[in-house]
Amino acid sequence: MQEKHCSIGVDLGGTNLKIAVYRKPDYTKIYERRAPVQSDDAWEYILERIHAEITNVFDFSGIPLADTACIGMGIPGLLDSSAGVSLFSPNFAHWKNVPIVSWLQERIPLPVFIDNDVRVNLYGEWLYGAGKGKQNIVLITLGTGLGAAVIADGHVLCGATASAGEIGHMHMVHDGRPCSCGSSGCLGRYVSARGMVRTFKEKLAAGQSSVVAQWVQGDPEKITALMISQAYDLHDAAAESTMCETGELLGWGLVNVINLYNPELIIIGGGMAAAGERLLGPARSIVAAHALAIPRERCRIVLAALGDAAGMLGAALYADWRLSHGITQ
Image 1 (cartoon, rainbow, N blue to C red):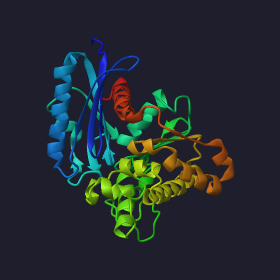
Image 2: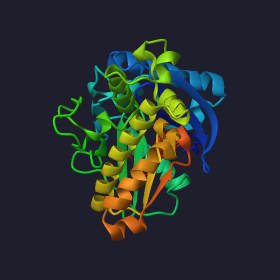
Image 3: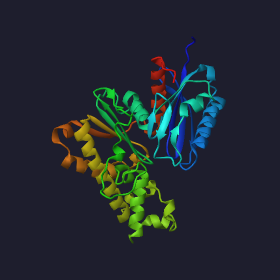
Image 4: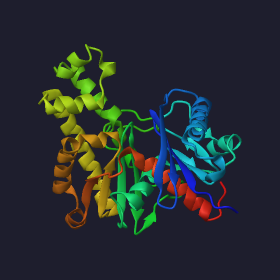
């Protein structure tokens, strides 16, 4: 069989779809596409969008289908990777038991592999990014929601239902905000872009003033996490208290992560990681005061090195690994 030199990595998020083509063996990115997705669309429409964008990759990159080995996909939520089915995703309103692999393989004659979106981010950071050379890592992505994935003693943890490391659903607030998982008070309802914006909106609704209200001309639906960071830099009191509260709650989550998993490295990625020490400063203070001393002293908390490209790269790496082990789905 003729060797194929390229692989495709797909990273499906709650608001954006990212696709890249990588050339082996060094996984140089040779083409990339991005497109918005709507979280309230039907799953069939979202898969149609993914299929259309993959088709566009071949049309515009110059990479022939015949030179492409496989497609790897990072999907948010719980899944059955061996069956190629996404069971549930908190990021999408109409998403249950979605047959991603069979649906795509009927339309694209390539092997398709799926895994959790945070795990594929972890593969990218572990092999090519901030976690290179480490054997005990927890990656936390702060974006639309909060996701996590774990490597312990050089092994990726999956668990009995491939849901190990669901730190975002750690119960943190008694009688807190309801979560799409069916519980309430989950960490991700507060420590995420959506969660932080909601906290900020609650402060405005309670009567606090903020320069952000002027920026959005009184329309709270236009408020973004980036605006809160920008207002923080202007010493806006509502933004500062929101960032501090969000960072401290993240810190309590990291205390549990350190005590449970004993990582040598915690990598913080996702769009909210751009807040940097605005968010991590309060988190580090909570960790310093409350995590077990010996594992805490061994653990570093760092920002992701690959930015939002880790998921695409990790998905391609994962697909090639599955294919190299003789797995065709």
